[in-house]
Length: 104
Image (cartoon, rainbow, N blue to C red; front, side):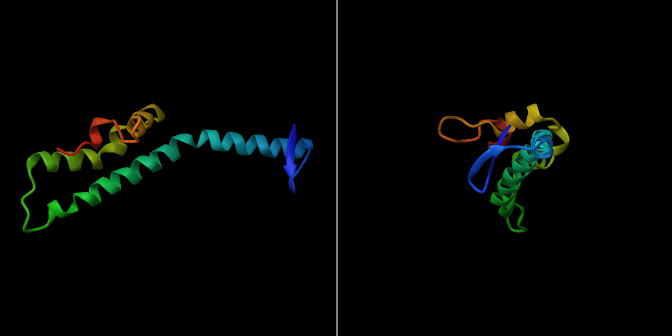
């Protein structure tokens, strides 16, 4: 296996190769956690965008209450990498396509 050290391509030692493969496995194994983090960041953004509905002088519709609750329930209701992929799917314009992100 070849690696880059100080911008020079050299043959990796067995130890370097093992370290590289271990890091690569760790990265792959953590994919679901990285995707969940992205989902939670989007969810937080959507909740922040509608926080003003929760102010005392604003009446929040039942649909908005239900939608906000569904956002808060995402981690409990979507628990695997396939679900995260669906939540993170985007159309050609870069907009999220899963229905859960659509405000009522």
